[in-house]
Image 1: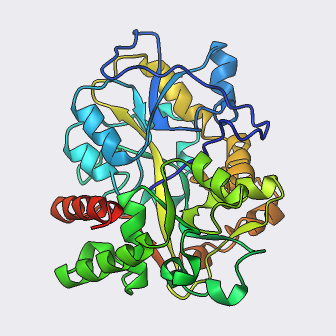
Image 2 (image 1 turned 90 degrees about the vertical axis):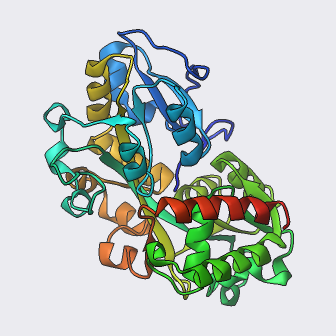
Length: 360
């Protein structure tokens, strides 16, 4: 999954900073910190204590999706920290790209949501080593312009394939989100159990959606601009698209109340095995993003939950309720969790999605 606000160029006064991006294979100095991330997470509001301590910013370089990031790091690209999501962590770990975390060096580690920490094989491996710090969590869900789309049309995710919305639909250029959507539509809540017949059924649905797609968005700037400018009325998007458009008084909302439900993911940070920069700075960065101040910004401005339960508890309950996180049981109801996939199934999805986007 899955998952950022591309705040650059939105004119929202969020204080986003364009940090330097290293070319592929670049080596950082021993006292530097390089973070391989989704664009938008370089916003200084996410790590104020780090900036205060070092009077400087980390170097950020960006990927478009986790498959791209995986291939780049496996090919020799060097960074210190990375930001994968639930469906990718195990793959990255098993490929030997990561080193375990020393949780004693991360402030607030013991305040992280215990239900997230105990997710099987996500945070901790069978040998007890910790490989992943969960941080942001949310949904991929139906997002629409409520002034242009009537309420009766958003009761099902099948709206995305309705010929009525030809050229008014947008999808993420992301195989995980695409097949999470398709799996929900065909009735699957556990995509790890997808059969060959169900794969064909899911792919057939995505081909129907493709007929309506005006654009496959690759970052959230694209979908926010497309919906904000009236180019797209219905989308499969992340929580922050609607959150950002509402800050601009655009009547775009998202819904968890379709018949099929939503997809849920957890993202966070990992420490690369061959991290070339400062380990001290890496842990200071992880501590700096794990605070109530940051949790409030993440939820209020981006619409995402923070994995630090204690920090979430400090936020105005009305804000928590408005963003849909007051009732976690309801939040995860009718959801497909983006858990790790069998490599063969994932490879098949990648190949098929490329064909679908090309019109085949």
